[in-house]
Length: 167
Image 1 (cartoon, helix red, strand yellow):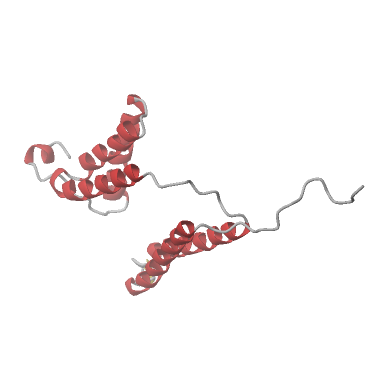
Image 2 (tube, helix red, strand yellow):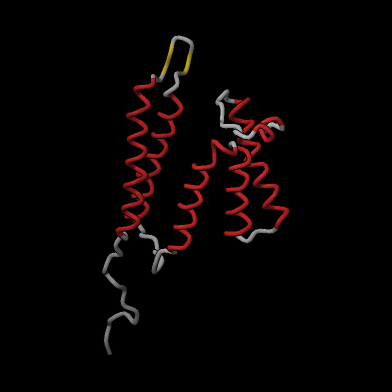
């Protein structure tokens, strides 16, 4: 009769995948870059918060969240998928390039509406009503929030007809 346990536990530690470490590093690098760049904009003025305060805060949050992510991965590495869905990556990157290319021509509202509809309806296979409502709220809502709430001008359409109807 032996006194060894029936189930042996593995003493080998799971490793963090290099792609996860690359992602954490990229987010941390962007956070630090935003932190450093925002200081040059000025964090505070005599009238109150300066133009660099919000980017500074967002850079700090991004850098801090990267550190938290790294600690979580070191404690318990996440399971990674076998491979990358290259079609999805290509579709997202290509749609972002198209969005950037047509933004000045079609304006923010129409460009973002089409971008969101593509990802919600075609790529995400969501129902028409939820896709339309989400894309409309996302494009028009963001436009009005930036233009009127934050006083940040977003591009409007270069076509006179679209421009006269507010797009």
